[in-house]
Length: 113
Length: 111
Image 1 (cartoon, rainbow over the protein chains, first blue to last red):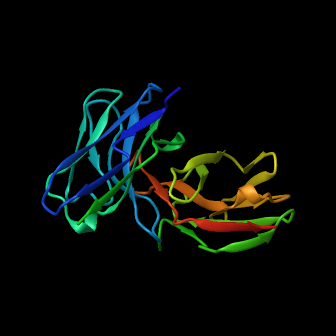
Image 2 (image 1 turned 90 degrees about the horizontal axis):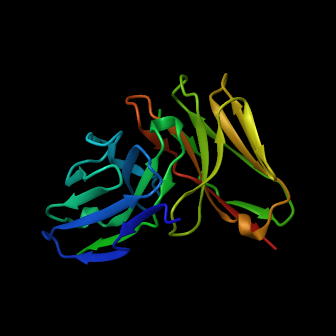
């Protein structure tokens, strides 16, 4: 029972490089989310997808794009990485929106030099 | 006022003791609340959902005070393995589908 799977687990980028973080869930959840977590701060929502075919900005969307490829997959793209994007990124899914608990992936630790 | 506020701690607790801490929230319309546990550098994991006045699961009790807009988490008979950061989560005020996370309360259980 995989739950939420994120890849890669670790990544180092140079400023200006691009990359895509992949996320897939096998729980048939409708909603999916991307968060970032920085030291001393709570998780901050980057983008979310309430259901297949829709995406919306969260609290800190600048510098990121997302794609809800299908019900299972929700990817996060950094087009031109900046040192301020050094963070731990978590993908999560929930059955249906804000009254359902979130299930998280293991996280991606990204460093931008 | 922040959507969700927590005392960052740390709460240093002797093994076997009881510890309790609060989370205040600003959205008076919130119907559901969650406590998550996060171990160092790992993903948050759901500890407890709170949909009415409270919930109890073994040594963990969550209580909701709607009048004062806070939820509390109480841990009885603390174990060393309870050492973690506890995150309070509340639906956001401005949009459907978002959950607002508190910054977390750190608990350290000592032998």
